[in-house]
Image 1 (cartoon, helix red, strand yellow):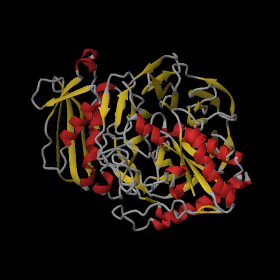
Image 2 (cartoon, rainbow over the protein chains, first blue to last red; image 1 turned 30 degrees about the horizontal axis):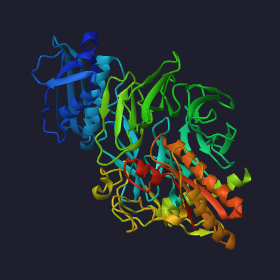
Image 3 (cartoon, chains in turn green, yellow; image 1 turned 90 degrees about the vertical axis):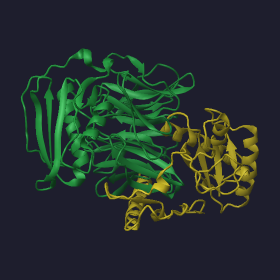
Length: 388
Length: 203
């Protein structure tokens, strides 16, 4: 646990005024500077986090707003700082009133935590400010696997290599990343413990070792191997290390991802162009899922299993599109270019992707856009799960 | 299956070595280029300990001068000094033009110029059975990265088939695809894309 809460939630009824949702720039909320002299601008981090959601509109203190945030962060407590904050409604009734005892290096995480508490209180959705992303950066003959805060700040390189790195995938508990590394000038799939740095090679077959994806329970990895002549989907039980082949044929089958029920969605050009297909947990007959255009690839599944986001080509440009498995509605979310590598946020509301150079995110309805502040380039982004 | 398991064990030992080698390393140190092109009959000789360094989350230093790559995915670096202006390699080292086969958009068919390149290299290989070549397939940057890995392999396999057809032993050929990860030319022009859709014949 990153923080220690000593406060209590106030039990106030809350009604969201839907007319003040994103059409009008979001729910107005006045945020005052936190007194107490902490080395982080906590109010600033909260305002930035809430602004990024697209659903809340932070205002300077004293503005006419529906809600107000006030707080302090001062030295004290067992860990170094006591951070206290209050969220109040228009009539001044306290909706949240909490304090945290944190170490100095936890002031930023606690600010994100406060942002998420406010966001959840006002929207009823789980927030993303306290989550993390991973991505690949490169330059100067090196490739980097980076883990950063959900806003792109606080990047930490957890792997540097002189050969390409690609396709990172978070384990469901958020403690490990599977990825493809070309170290030794050949591809292999590696699982790295994010916290200890320990690495384990899980596949180094001849040919392609690509596109790792964790099963929902974290016990299996699906990936692509071409050791039998052309790319096929395999599933590996991580405990027994025995890979089971799930597809066959002379086409390209790659980019597997798991649905919550254990079935697998993947890209295949068996019909002449890359499209998405679905097979059962043990393989078998494939059901085609996409029919719009001649290029739909790199599926990613929403946490609830309802939506599949993908790379979609239209008019020579690559876009992020989403398919609703319930209604079969297909929607293009981005204006397009070189968009690739979509990944759902753990609350299912946002999709992070790369435009080839930089990371950006779009909401599932296409209306909210977020940018990520990176020091360098970024691609292959993956949003971490909420975790433990 | 037995073959596959043996690979896994070898790879696991390799990871252990890489892990040990990472102790005490920092990102500040200039990386040596990968031991590319060193090929033996046992396969590619890798010195993986020099290739990758892992760090626990939160303990890895970030060096701005190597990390700031806002100029693009291809940030120059270790160019061979013989690139035309405006082109930068990704540090893989320059491969001579007579060892590169280029491909059309979305295609793994070998054009006639490529046939000549393949024939010339095939003569060298059939003349010396001890030479092992690695065919490295590449794509342009458009589309999905992993799908491009598959397309790059398809291109490399086209070259492999053509070489075998001219008498090269399959035992002399290895195939690897880098997809769009190692572009030869930077930029989003059709010209760059054409230079990046290629198979490099490495030996």
